[in-house]
Image (cartoon, rainbow, N blue to C red):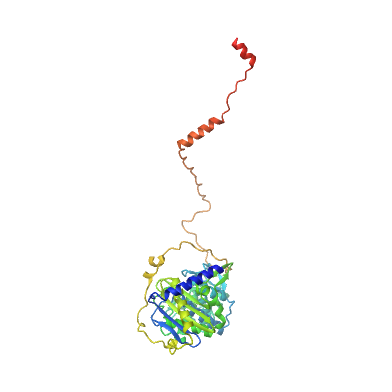
Amino acid sequence: MRSKDFLLRVMMAFGLAIIATQPLQATTAVLFDVQTGQVLHAENADKPWYPASLTKLMTAYVAFDVLRTTELGDQTILRLSEHANAQEPTKLWLRTDAEMTLATAIGAMIVKSANDAAVMVAEGVGGQIARYTRYGACLPERDDRDAARLDDISSPPHPMDVFASRRTGLGAARYDDATALWVACRYQSFVARMNATAKRIGMKSTTFVNANGLPDARQVTNARDLGLLARALIRDFPDYAPIFAARSMRYSGGRLRSYNALLRTYTGADGMKTGFICASGYNIVASATRNNRRLVAVVLGWSQASRRNTRAAALLEHGFKIAGTRFGPHDTLLNRVPSSGNEMVPPEDIRASLKSRSCRRGPGRRIRFRPRVFSVRTLEPPKHDVIPVPEKNAMRADVRPKPRRIKSKASRPVPKRVRRKKTIQKKARKKPVVRAFSAGAALKARN
């Protein structure tokens, strides 16, 4: 392991030397000091971009905020819904109704960048957000039929409490519909809280539609706003810093490894998160500390993960060299970065420049393999009142299937050379005929 880390450090140093002599890719980036907020480097900092899995930084911020202000705890049990299980990879490949603690889900969301874990966190924490609002506020377009269907099960303060007490008295369809509506309500409440938090922090050009960063044309941000989010996370929740600095985590007998290679290759790296979708390329928000000085680099839109890491490391190295000197725009704060005129430009889709075959092939690709499903404790399935009706073409129990005849393979012709060899061996096995005779009988025959 030490030799591998040493090799990675040598490759990183070689990349830093190359990147200084080659022209840089036209991307967006920002480098700033966490303590003072002074910008040390900025390029297209306000250019709109798809955040990808960097969205999970805001998901973590809202979760930490709710944990601090409500009765939720790190060991609160979360349940995997069908909506969370339907998310695209990267994911934990859990079964529906699987359980895990809130701390484990947040760790898997940050370290492994699991999309299903991010939705679990949003739905679990969103219940606390929706608890203090009207249940109908999550469904502004519901009609009279929806209201009549929820009359008996939407009593305050918490609809899920009613589900638990009257579970056996509800039909299967009513229970499933009410549960799906309540889960959707919690998720929408969480996303609304994400957007409200973004405005409070100062992220003026950011809009969130989901909690995990999967492709959506409406979900946009820029490097400056992501820098503000990273600084707010470090400033407001220093106790959760080890989650972003973890190289791996243990889960269900296995180990989930972080995608942030800078944690293993760059000296002083201590967070935070990577992100990738085909439309936005490889992105990273990286932080590092040296000599009690912490810098954060936001790099977006690279065609390869290795080049993205090299660019982020080069920016951090440049920042530590000029930190405390008169060089660099120290009079520019992160929330006052001058505009470059790219605010109204739609996000660029760099799918064609990526070397990933799956991105060039487009959506709808097949997954060649399915990783093993982690064995976790699951909830007892709900007991419904409806008896399942058998299908019309179902096989009757008294009809036995006909036995399958196994046909023997046709014998292959034996080559002539092998056939001759077997014949010789067969003749050699025959015992020669030995006739018994005596010397006296032979003399009489001569006479």
